[in-house]
Length: 215
Image (cartoon, rainbow, N blue to C red; front, side, top):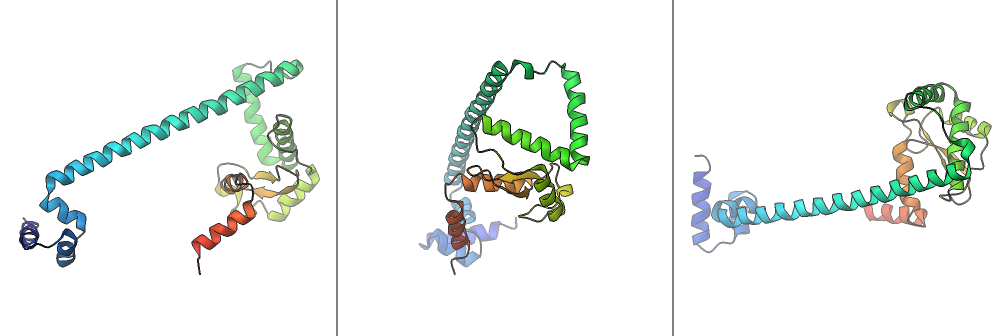
């Protein structure tokens, strides 16, 4: 009942030749609201079409994500298969339950032993370097430990302590030169990775700053 008076006023203004925007300004409501009052059938048809287009875009994005995920998983499977083919002595002979127990022990030691964590990180980076993803890290365990202690267990970019996250800090290094740069949280490390994919992250960051603060 409360909306009957504005609707009647909108109809009166529309009959007087006023546009939807003019009516919205007079009544102090959104233009879309006036359109819904005066032309409900067209409004519903438009919203239905927009919803259909949105659902179509969502399905297209889901399909692209699915194809990309499958591509990444296929590459990973091929790398693992090739690695164990060339290194049969490295193949894990443990059962699934034994691997779960070993992984739990490893994660517990990583959380409590910084040197062991650095060792495992360097081992992982070296494995990725052998696969051809990026250059190997040139830092030593001692250098990484000193950097971690200097940062106090906090991300070098955002400054948040790793206890505020579910994941440990990641060791960041240049994928071209292999130089170790510091410890980053998962979020900052991922953002930095996207920036480096642009080819020139420094100039790209400068453009972002100019875009956000044109003054």
